[in-house]
Amino acid sequence: MRMPSRSHPRSLDLAAWFDGEIVGDVGAHVARCARCQRETAELARIRAWLRPTERFASLPADRAVKGG
Image (tube, rainbow, N blue to C red; front, side, top):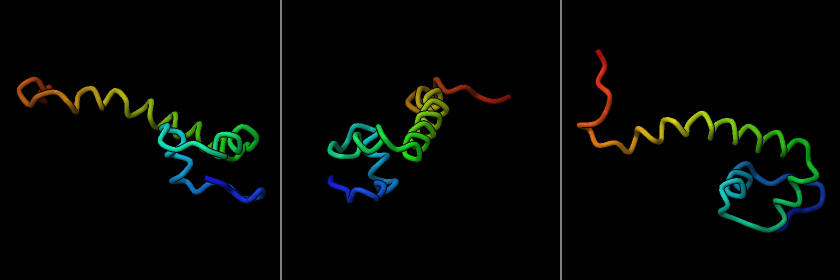
């Protein structure tokens, strides 16, 4: 993905780059852009917050923790 020199990647492209789905100029842009660094830091915080949930989402229903 090529970007004009004064633009930022779309949030969707930034998230795809963060997930390793796309390569190109996005990484070079993030390396020099404080705004995009903050956005990718937020993506990292969200991923860390969701990660414990992912472990339980894949458990079979009979192993899920029951409330109560």
